Length: 266
Image (cartoon, rainbow, N blue to C red; front, side, top):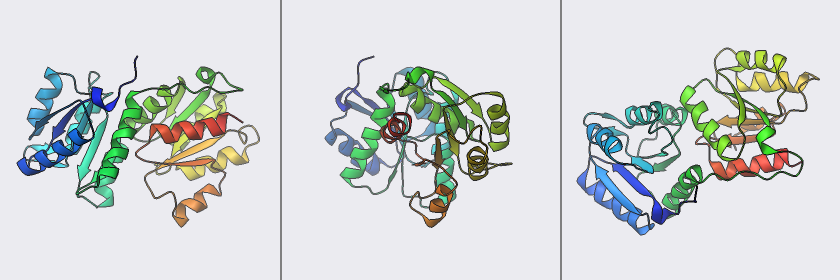
């Protein structure tokens, strides 16, 4: 598939405020996106998604007939729309509210109001999800890299899997928590583990400690995906368990490719 540029991209914008719709649409046009279709309600968004192809959805958090979370779950649960990147624009700063979107596989989160540089980065990160780019590794055929993906959110696993597959990693087994991952580790051989941090039964830290202290698995590179700040003292302690790399949610394709090239290129 040919790579898309921003000028090729059709964006569906969902924003209930007429003024905000005009502002965000004008900022998107200034970024040279191909076209912007705008609606104001969840029902109109669903209708637009069914009637024509959108490359990216840009949405606020609240509508008169639902929420952005309802919309992203609808998109990600429908096979015809699941691959469409979802970008949230919101003034919401409650961690728990934003966490729900991160777990649902949001491509980018923009604060409201936002600066043009923030919009540019979010659009580029979203475009990276659309434009797949297979890794070229010196010592591996990337298609043969055996990956264990661990996350308790099915939607988050789907999003991470898409990013990994876009980089050429197609041999992926999934587990919904650390305990389930242990069963797979005992019965299979893996070259890479990508795990969430917060999970029930056994979290990412406990799983990482098991992998590092077991002679049969201690060599496996571990990428931990977390919605917590990766520069926090808490996450620095997590790295002491032997995690090779920390990734933020949203899981950005360009950042992940750099990490994969470093971990698998050695």
